[in-house]
Image (cartoon, rainbow, N blue to C red; front, side, top):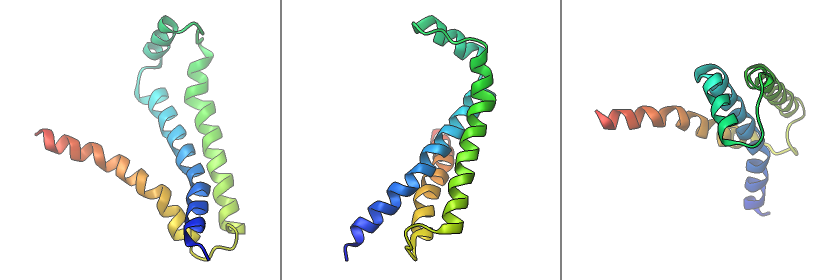
Length: 116
């Protein structure tokens, strides 16, 4: 038995969650925390492809809805059907995407604490 292959398989499977959570958080940050108008003006200035008013709608509503829906569908599938009958995949797999998420929220606070 090769445990390294199992671990790699589980982490690869759960990387899907990392990517979707990153897309969700980035779209929420760009759409709601930063000014979409300034970002779209900058994109129109430096890019050959111009973004229109629909860009704001897509970034604010469509992308977060799709990312949330995909996370929900995959999570539901993993809970109901499991993943390749691995007994310990839940702790290891969910830890592989929860740990970076927790670190990403704690790291800025640690960096700010060092500046003071």
